[in-house]
Length: 85
Length: 85
Length: 147
Length: 147
Image 1 (cartoon, rainbow over the protein chains, first blue to last red):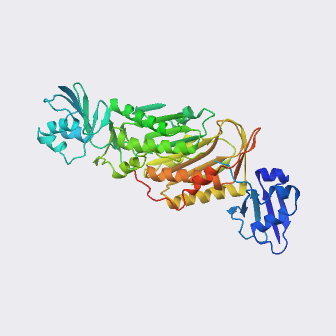
Image 2: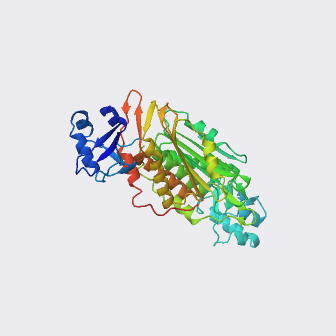
Image 3: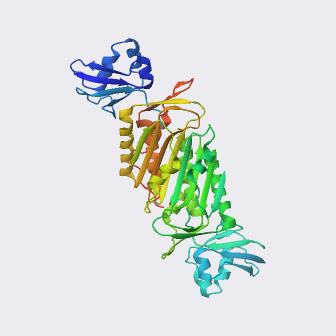
């Protein structure tokens, strides 16, 4: 299934990318599975999405836990802990 | 000894007086003794300064407990609990 | 530190601008109180009022990091929605600014010599909830957070 | 309720006037955050930001009496002492106004998608103290005081 993935702040800079369309392999049904799928690319992705890194995520503009499910057409975002206010 | 006594808000209205000079009888050494002395006048004083009434006091513009001592020349104030802010 | 007991209105922006133009300030907590529904007259004890407020602000400054602070309290006749009181606290971090601002308001409510008389209703009674609000700061609050 | 994520500056007095002209309002608690010492760029996630802030304000309104509320958060390039964020909460009583205002700030710090990058220093790290500040509101705070 197809999803859109967006990156913000230091993640966006590390990956040199704001957004990409992604065809997820079958069974990639949660945010953490998407993250693992991207991490498996290695290189900047392996680094920026390493398990030891604090990465927050949102699905369709709602902050979610890593266990949240994803479905076709979703907009999934990865970003570092927020620092506004 | 001589002191000045001031009244505010509902106390001022009940007594019909903002301020008075007072010659305290010997041994009237605390705020509560001054209050008792005034209460003994009876009438509006007996009512407004009755023991059951919540009356706050200040000596020389500092809020004090009833046990606070008074000395010649002090400005003693009696007033209801404050309601500013 | 600015403390003013006055009849006239004040300008919120101008008061806040006066305490925030310091690049060490990151947080300004402000409380604005105003008259609800019924016109009132605010009486105070002129020689005592500023002294009492100054004491409250100094105590707040001992407990939290207060870089600057303005307290304005009006007296005299006020109409519904007229501003009564302004407390503005500038600090590096929001935890200190919020705590100091709320502490000053709670103490002002129970320690500063002001009395409200509502038009057609008479003197406002002091509230037990205000005493309770001030009491909760004893002993001094710990665990001020950063940020 | 007004929520705005914007580059331009705002006028404090005007924003507060807009929420206080109701004679049921007795208390307005305001937080103003500003840039300390180092210029910065604030990045955000446009489609998510207002939604996240709206959710936070709605949660505050379930917990406390919020009669009106304005949240403005700036993005883009900001200089030292430039205002970043404004949270203003109008309520009948100060306990509700303070609690809702501080709650909104604490959640905004941990839930709203903004990221600060300081000139010459890089991305600002999130603070554990901000997580702790947001955590203390769980479970819902009780004992909101009157006044």
